[in-house]
Image 1 (cartoon, rainbow, N blue to C red):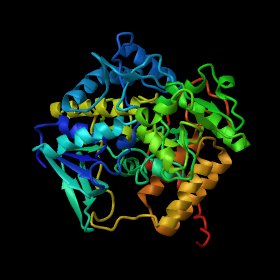
Image 2: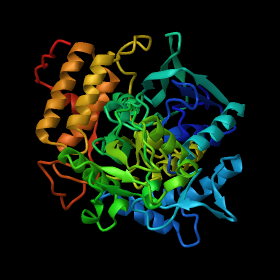
Image 3: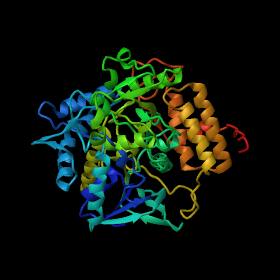
Image 4: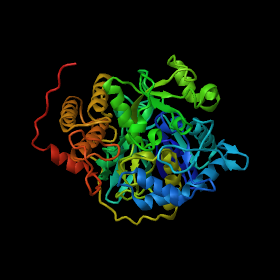
Length: 514
C-alpha cells in the first residue's frame, strides 16, 4: 500500500487528480476504456471561469450562490471560483484546444451567469476535447498504473479508515487493491433514470459504496434536469447545449409562441430548474416545447455547434430550418458523498471529487458549466491535500463490510433495471409527489427482495428517501404537494444506518411476475 493512491473513475476529475498527484504512485481504475462511459466527454458547454476583464471570481461565486437556492456553501463557491481560471490556463498549457479570440479567451454566456465566462471548444465540444488531452497525458505518465476494464465493487476498510477497494476485472476475477488514499470519481446517477443525457452506467455507485463504509450522503434528492435534451426517443438523450440559448435561441410552443418570457425575467436564460419545469409543463399540457435556433444560429449551425447538429440530423431534424423538440432530462446530480471542498469524507483515507461528491458547491441547483470547473479545481485541491497528508477530519472507525470480497457482484437484470429507471423518471423526475415517491420505494423494496442488495437499488433508495423527506420545493426538487419553499434552508444528511432503521419492521412487498 505504501503511499499509493487509488482513483476510482476516469472522467475529468479522476484524470486531472491522477496527473496532479505526480510523482506519487497512482492506480487508476476505469470500468470502460478511457474516454468511454464518462459523462465528462459529453459535456458541451465548457468550463466556467472568471477569465474576462469585466468579470471576477467574486461575481462567479455570487452567481453560484444565487443559482443554488439557499443551499450553496459560500466557502466552496469561493474556492471553485478562485481556482477555475488557473486550471483553465493549465489545461491550455497541456494542449486542450480551448478557443481564443486574439489575445482573449472566447467565452460563452449560459443561464444564470452575469457575464460571459464559459471557456469553450467549437461551441459544444469542450468535454470531448479536454478528455482527449487528459487521456493522452495519462497514458504517457509513468507514475500512473492504468487498469482499464476494472470495476470497483466495494470499498475496503479497517479500524483506521478506508484501505482501498475490491475490484472486478474483465475476466470476472475480483482482487483487493490496497491503497493509503482512495479517491471516488465515478460520476453521477443519471443512469437511474429512463430519460438521461448521461452514460447509462452512471448509477450512483460512489454513494452506495461510500454509504456501506459509513460515509454520509448529502442532498441526494437534488437531480438537475437539463431543460433542452433532444426529445426524439433516444437513450441516452442527446443534449442541446445551453450555449445555444446563450447565443440567442428561443423556446417556443407548437404554434411558434415563446413561453419563457411570461415565466421568468431572464426568459430562456433563467436558472435551469425554472426552465426545466416550464418545458416539462409545456409538454405535459400538449402545447409542446421546441428550441428555435433558425434565426439566432441558422446556417452557421454545423460549424458553431457540430455535436448538436449531428445529433439532430441523426433524428431527422435540420435545426437550421426547423425548431428542435426538447424535453427536460436527468443530467447532473448535485448531491452525493458528503465532502469538504478538498474532497475529504468523514472516513479517513476516503475522498470523493467531481459529480459523485457533495461539497455544498451546487446547492439545490447547479450553475451551468460549473461541473467541469468543479472537477478540475476539486481534483487539484484533493491532490494537494493528499500530498500534504492534511487529514484534519477525525478518524471514524470502520470495518470491512460483511461478506467476502470475492463474492459475485449483485446486479439487477436488464428488465428489472428498466422498470426501476422508468419508475424513477415517472415518480422522481421534474415534478414529484409523496404518493409517487412512496410507490417508488415500494418498488425498490420489492426489487431488493427478489434480486438482492444491489448498489443500484441502494443509490436509488438514497435519492428517493431524500426526496420524500424534503417536504418543500427548492431548486431541482419540486414537490407538487409541497410547492412552497421553506424559509430556512437545510441539507439532507443520510447514512446507511438511518436507511436500515427506517426499513425496520416493514414487510417486503410482493413483486409482480415479469
